[in-house]
Amino acid sequence: MNRKQTNRRLRPILCHGLGYAAGVLLLLAQVAAAHASVALLMEEPYGKFGAMNPTGHSAIYLNHICAASPTELRTCQPGESGVVISRYHKVAGLDWVAIPLIPYLYAVEDVTQVPQSVDQTQVDALRDAYRRKYLLELAPNASHGKTPKGEWTQLVGESYDRTIHGFEVVSSSEEDERFIALFNDRKNTGHFNIFVHNCADFSRSVLNIYLPNAIHRSIVADLGMTSPKQVAHSLVQYGTKHPELEMSAFVIPQVPGAIKRSKPVKGVAESLIKSKKYMLPLAILTPELTGSAVVAYLAKGRMELPKNALVFNVNDNVMEPGDPVPVQATNTDPDRTPLSSSPPVAVSIPAPAPNAATGATPAALATPLPAAPVTLP
Image (cartoon, rainbow, N blue to C red; front, side):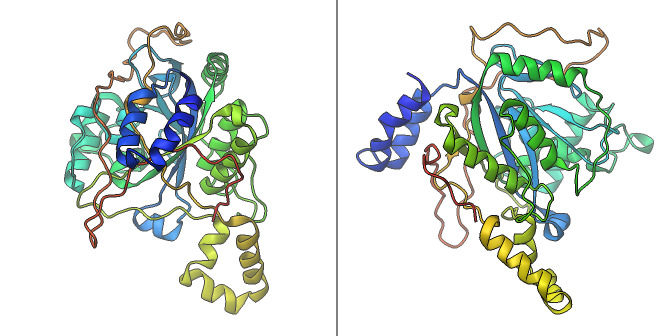
């Protein structure tokens, strides 16, 4: 039974009868993602920089492509759960870095090691332990063997800092092999620019390899820049017009704990008009520009996240026996330490934290995106 047929069978169950919780359990039990897929990860902003620039971060998750090293890709072996690849600012002078899924989310090698609740000291320790084992070439020790500062921390443990929204479409083994060959051959030299060469531009370029001309900038909503929200907007619009892509949405909740919660992702125009610290000075100094930004947001900048998106489960995205034989890596240096991507076990990703005011826990609902166009606020 394919995923589309399963969703069609289970939709009445989700809406009636067994109820949402039972429907989710049944869906997770029946839907094993033997298919290959490519997913956009739209990641919420956090911290001081996130308060100044609430557009967040974007990355690409490929569930049948794995990391031979942080800068080299290969086809996954059975039992592996894929790789997250993105562009970063000032990480070892590289344009992109590839990290296995579980370390990227939790800075550990197996989901059984994921803590149920964390504070910043625990997160720092988990990240540094993984760095010392696998990422010393990208983030070498500081003086006296101390942990270095820098943006390498964005490579691992992202789910401790923020909630991540995913938008997935199916891919083929041929498309994955072409992508591996292309990225293993291309020059990996960083020239990050927040306006024209940022993480969202990278995600747009990757998705356009799989879905030619599907993802585009918005001159109106993002004032000519590329934002993670605009990439998601484009992908959702394209997916609703191409049902054969079996587009679906999921959410990876921020791990509960003492770390401050991340904030909703915003587009560029939306950031301007919804922030008093930007809006008031702009309205006084450049009322025409401010009015244009408001019109741009109302016309093109709104995007509403899919309701009841599936809470992500690693086991639904594991490479299964019988899938294509791995492509041989171009770099066969025997001294290179490959990144580990241990086979996941039957453990669900931590659930969302209960609401502090009501004590209610958000429901984990499993539904595909609607067939009709989605309005993104």
